[in-house]
Image (cartoon, rainbow, N blue to C red):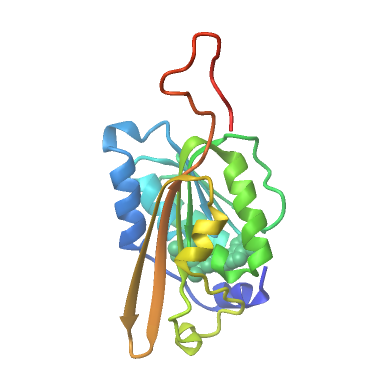
Length: 217
Ligand SMILES: C[S@@+](CC[C@H](N)C(=O)[O-])C[C@H]1O[C@@H](n2cnc3c(N)ncnc32)[C@H](O)[C@@H]1O
């Protein structure tokens, strides 16, 4: 992981509130009464904005970040609201193999975390995300587009700018792919992509011939 993030988390609190795009995607996917047994992975949880929100709103969450300091901040926040029975935060560089079994999670959230890694690491991490998501599980990712002025992001180290075409290639056989782009000027432009997609898995033929069963892809 880029050491810029360890320096950042050691000196300031990064991000207290979850982005509205993540809130909307999660709340659209699961009604309040259907969340308790839904397991989410928050990749690059930072100080816990999304992990805290999701636990507070009823999901079961695993947050991971490469910075010990961020993980401590996230745990402290969870403890303050008595949410440690519903959420955990652990130190992990997510570009290595994941420590979870296949099909462990119903949803994976990447709020502007994968994009702070080189493209090959993003691609290999997406393969691990696919492995640990259940078939049909939800990925919600956010990333910076090439319309972003690099200097507007500050001292955040590595940034890989990606386009909707890049994400279509990286998630080529995923389903329900939805990519929204928004540009804000403050005062330099920042272009953000919000990507939602469903993990591919075994599919049933809609009218299977009598001598055939489920087909895996
Ligand atoms: C822009 S911050 C976003 C934090 C959080 N997702 C949020 O919504 O507030 C990016 C985070 O990703 C983490 N990160 C970046 N690359 C990482 C890696 N390879 N492994 C683990 N964490 C990483 C950083 O430490 C940082 O906390």
